[in-house]
Image: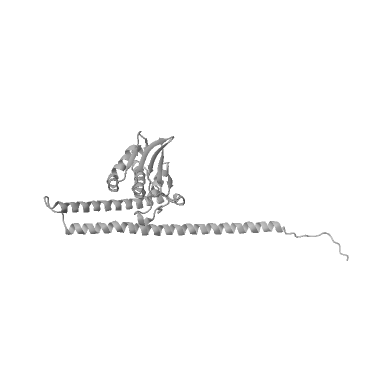
Length: 275
């Protein structure tokens, strides 16, 4: 029986297509690996930030508590003298009570910062908007800082010629301005501080300028991060949360905080709020 060739069956593998599929699969695996590494790094940073927060909080709370304990022990051992007694003894007790109040205020501020962190990271800030004149807020803050201003012998000028009214949370705006003025006093190197209140287009501005240590260019993008300080922590107390919380308040109010700074020349912080 003769054999007849009826046709050919050819199996052909498109090597180019197979190579593309392999490359795409490898790229997908790399993306998955990169994403996994990113998530792990985020988790490591979160844990490191938590540990740093706990360490700093413990240190900052321990210092005023130790001072309070010493002062209370001394007051117990040496009760206030009756009226008409030695004026020097009464002056000592007044100084001790003033120190007590200062440390209590510091503890209250630290606890408030920690509570704000909890609110921001869980449910968000709860704002209570109402009619506000920024001139009044700024003047109240400056008046509150007057004892410290006098003690540091710093010149603080306020330029608030016209009413700047809007609808914001007065207590939260006060908190932001307080932080900006406090930082100017801390880092202003005892030089004059200027505070101004004005409008610019659709925005209300509170501008706080100092002529102190300033901030390095590569640090300016970091100062609004939690636990950040542009100056070494050993020089100034605090949790490093103030500017971060202030920025969260500004953003929740529809605004923002901007910074313009030069090392050894000073810093200008601008709170911008919508009118």
